[in-house]
Image (cartoon, rainbow, N blue to C red):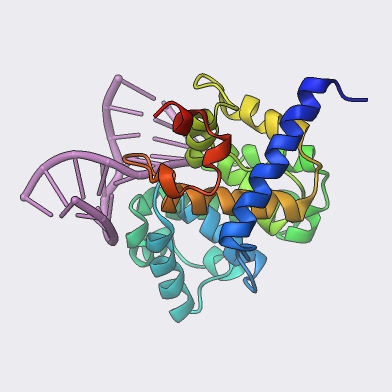
Length: 227
DNA sequence: ATCCGGTTCC
DNA sequence: GGAACGGGAT
C-alpha cells in the first residue's frame, strides 16, 4: 500500500491531467505516421520547434526518402541539404546514419527486433547511439515502440516547477522517476500526458509572460498562487 | 560552458 | 535585424 504523500501526489497529477484533457481534448500525436517517420522526427526535433521539423519531413517525403532504409543509401551531404530547416543539419544527418548503422549491425536492420527488448534494455540500447540522448530515446520508446516511459522535456520541467510539484534542481532522471512513480505505467496515458504538457507550455505556460489567468490548471499552481 | 547555425517572433 | 528557441556531445 502507498503512503499518504504518494497517494496525494498521484491524485493531484490525475486531476491536473483531467483538467488538461477537458481544455485541450485528447491529443492524437504522431497519428498515422510510420515508426520510421517518428524516429526521424524525434531526431530532427532536437532543439528546434516542430515547425522546422515538418518542413524537413515534407521535403524528405517529396524525395521519397522518409524511411530508414532509404536514408541508409543516401549520403550525409544529401540528407543534410534536405533537412536544413532543422538547424543542426550536418550533425543530424550524421545522427540519422548512426541510428541506422546501429540498427543494421545489431538488429539486422529490423526495428521489430530492437523494439522487442523490454523498456529498460531498449532505452540502454538507444542511448548507446551517438546523437540519441535521454529525451530522444524516450520519445522513440513511447511513440514508435509504444512502450510506457515518461518523456521529460524543458516544458515538463518548467510547468512542474511552477506548479510546485518539482524542484528546480531535479534532473531528467529524478523528474522521470517522479512521474513513473505517481502514474500507472500506461502507454496511452504517457503519450497523451506529454502531449498535453507541450500544448500547455506553448499556449499558456510560456517561458515569458505566461497566461496564468486563463490556465486550465491554475488552481493547482504555486506560481499562480504567489502572483 | 560552448558548439551546432535555421526559423520565428517581436 | 536581433534575440529566443532548446537537445546532445564534448
